[in-house]
Amino acid sequence: MMSRTLCAELPAAAGRPVTLAGWIHRRRQLAAVTFVVIRDRTGQSQVVVTDPAVREQVSALPEETAVRVTGTALANPKAPGGVEVVEPSIHPLCAPARQQPVDLWRPTLRATLPTVLDHAGLTWRHPGRQAVWRIAAASLAGFREHLDGNGFTEVATPKIVGQSTESGANVFPLDYFGSTAYLAQSPQLYKQMLVGVFERVYEIGPVFRAEPHDTARHLAQYTSLDAEFGFVTDHRDVIELLRGTLAAMVERIAERAGASVEMLGARLPVVPERIPVLHFRAALELVGAAPDEPDLAPEHERFLGEWAKTTHDSDFLAVEGYPAVKRPFYTHPQPDDPRWTNSFDLLFRGLELVTGGQRLHNHADYLAALTARGQDPADYGPYLAAMEYGMPPHGGFALGLERWVARLLEIENIRYTTLFPRDLHRLQP
Ligand code: AMO
Image (cartoon, rainbow, N blue to C red; front, side, top):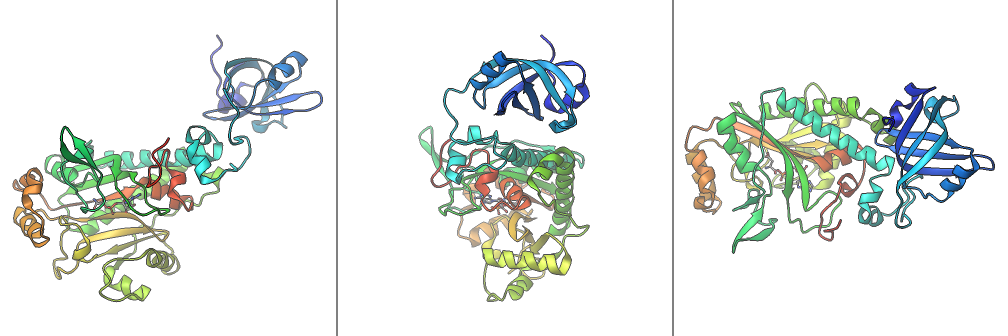
């Protein structure tokens, strides 16, 4: 069998016999000719059918039939990509068993969100949907490459755990051989323990949050891009690592998924040399909230996003110093005023994208912090034990992949940037 030519390789194959393999994306049957658009993982190619027998065959092969097409590549300035396949023979590999619920050949997928999600295995085939995930995948590659290049070790930590890590409320309990376990809300405790081993670690993995709210920015399972590293001075070192990581992610998107960016008309952000930083207190003042407000509301984040754009020409803004009452027990206080913390949120285009900060590293401070919160240190035994053996000052961050892609592409609902979203109402597909 002739080796396969990918659609993207067709222009270079002009004048030669070729075999394409892919899906019938679209058929257009005119009076004397049928155009068949073949789609593969690299793009689309036009196949021109004039032989009456093959035209009849094609008329019975619906869109999304998987096929192999053998013919001759011929330069034609009018064809998409400048080369088309002529005099084809078409070998169906697998015909659809039923009619598609959506037309994938339309430039824009015309379907409601539930339809898109219910038929995710099919709707992700749409070129515009594929482009979304190709950008997500390029982001992951950029994250990995940047951290690999800076002495980080990739780790994989348990997703079935014995205790909550972030807050008690939104954990999924499960039956673990007769006792209660939980789905991990984050790799937080493990990534810190592993700083004591490798100094610098990162993990890309699923995390689970039993979010009781049906919002456009919360999922019950999302992909967390976590980094943690030792020998930091404070959270500003973490913001600097995050800055470089984001820049590498954007660079990798431009490099690996440039065509997807173009197809979606996305505006890639410029990651500034220095991300503007605002103290939480100042942020409250700016948005006109009461000075004892413990958190920023979504409308505050939107306001601050616009403020960063107009005053710093930045799509990113780090808000540091979040009140201790709102941050988890492992958060390092602000040394000169322990009402505040050495933690931050990074807003991207007015949405919280990242949480990070410096952590406690002294064992005694952990005992005090847990006790002050009414939590039992015994619940964190092995984690606290790791803190007993010379843990360096350390910090890190976690970025939500789906939120990143949603804000990058200015897609309102995070469910559109998740391959198979899980939420309050959705467990399928
Ligand atoms: P946090 O809980 O703020 O921090 O989560 C970090 C980032 O994850 C994303 N995110 C979500 N995305 C989709 N659906 C959700 N339900 C959801 N919840 C959070 C957000 C958020 O900024 N351990 C800390 C991180 C650290 O300090 O290193 C943590 O998990 O983009």
